[in-house]
Length: 175
Image 1 (cartoon, rainbow, N blue to C red):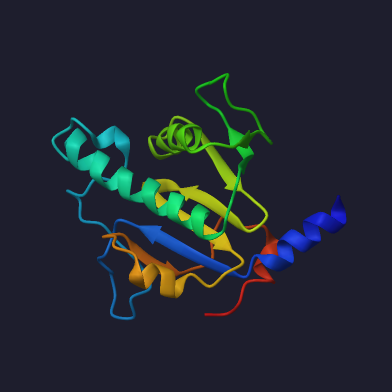
Image 2 (tube, rainbow, N blue to C red):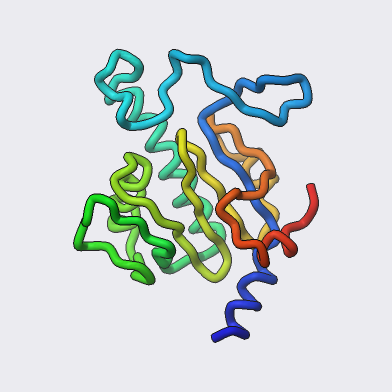
């Protein structure tokens, strides 16, 4: 088992941050920021900040991008890791494999709507979810060309996930 884990760590060489945000707080474009009137969570729906329709458009972009990355990597299943099931949803457990697109979409909606938290992992790729609608993709392929040709309004940049394990950080290629 340990050998398999080391192989997994070696393969994960690229890390990206994916967000709906495009505004930077400084000239060197390192710190993303939001204006006070911008929504950052599903809980903002119905509070005059974002409509359900506007929210679902962005949520769908995140889900579509994740599905495209899975297809690019030929991922057949994603494993739930580090599950935080604060709503006690019985259909999910740590190390559970998600093997079909319909179940993955349901799970992604729960994660993006902050009903559950976990990492989604495969041999070639991991997805980490952060506060304020941040998504991190760690993978074994450089996806920069793929992202540049994808039709999305999301902001995608090389960035080391704050949820990555220390051993993996040593393997990430410098930007």
